[in-house]
Amino acid sequence: MISIQQVEYEQKSTLRNLLQLYKYDFSEFDSEDDINPSGLYEYMYLDHYWTENGRYPFFIKVNHKLAGFALVRTFGTNENETNPFIYSIAEFFVMKKYRKLKVGQTVAFELFNRFPGCWKVAQIEENEPAQAFWRKTIDRYTNGRYKEIREDDWEGPIQTFSSNMEDNA
Image 1 (cartoon, rainbow, N blue to C red):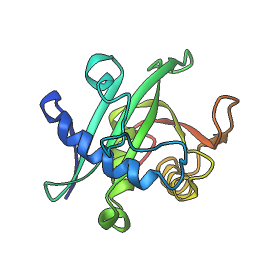
Image 2: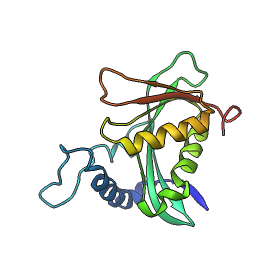
Image 3: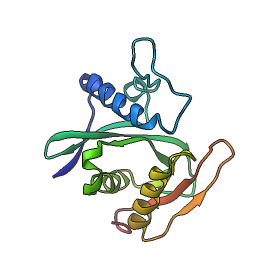
Image 4: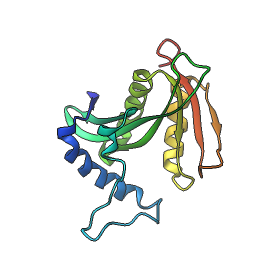
């Protein structure tokens, strides 16, 4: 059974621990990010998930065991939608042993349904596995009704689409 659970403030240290695994995995694509003198990666936005509106941290669980996390945030507005927020996957991590079990796709679909509206999902240019995952997942979720764009302030592809539980999944 695959599920997501909102991370409570008291569970922040567990999320911080999972972020270490994520940042280590991600380090092959980001040569600028180094560990600090204590041997740990830092994530400057962690506290923001409990101090700012529009940020939503989730644990990913498989059979009630931690399997990763997803960080969703809102930014900007879209006047053309019933829900004016634009949602984004800020960070998304599934432990390697769960990656071939459709855990990521299942969780992504759940998040898209939980936050209906306009989505932008971005990947850095170097992270080709993430690009392949998100293209495939979003294509399946939207039945091919998404756009891939580039923006001046981001180096990599961005998939844009609207999520609506009646139309998708």
